[in-house]
Figure 1 (spheres, rainbow, N blue to C red):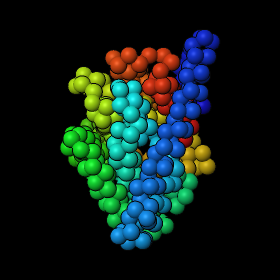
Figure 2: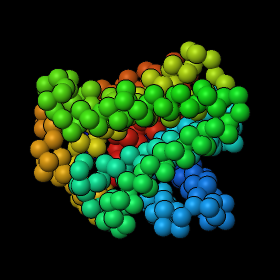
Figure 3: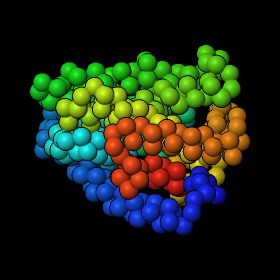
Figure 4: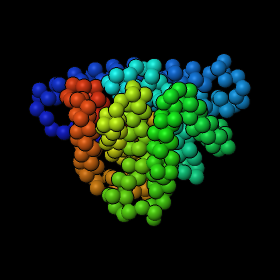
Length: 312
């Protein structure tokens, strides 16, 4: 069993099931919302000056589906803190652009050397390494173009994303993931990779939503803490699925961490230890959510449960 759901009584389980079903419906609506926004952002009618091959490759990776968790998180936090989906959209688009660029570059032969992503050939397999590198570059710069149109909040939003995506966040985490000699040994080193590579961007998604809503500093901090803990929970489950999942379900190649001799929570702590780590981070996410008044039955808490139960 790859899930990490904790033991619970029947009433709590029923409550979680109802919340999860409501959360699933909301997530599906958010997925459709961001899919439409991405398609409109890169369509030929809107971007006639782009080279056709580059736009095609950008569409190929952007519109390939996926969980769309980060943009959904931007929207949820923004709405829950008094904003609207319209205010959330630029941040949601930008975070998904950055996330997708990171996947394109991570899949390259010089990085993870993967040939399957979201159930189909990776960008460099479909278009060549040169176009894949440039596609990632184009997605990254487009993210900040989108945020640049956000008026008075543009600089603040861009700073949140840049800090999470750059050397002190996702890019720095990828360096430590590739070069184990540069990080602390054991569990703490692995957690540092996860904090930078995954949790930073998830925290930014929450903070982008809070910032777009005009939330105060305390609410922004709590939202960012919620997103970071959710990201660490997500990554712990991801490590589990790399061992217990299959390509048809995951839409990507399982067993890559072991094949590349990567340090993971499963390799360091075993399956039970990795499940315990996922539960620990889920509890931290619940504690951060409670600071915002989000308790059992709230869609933020349902999202935590979804992380623990996911199979893809």
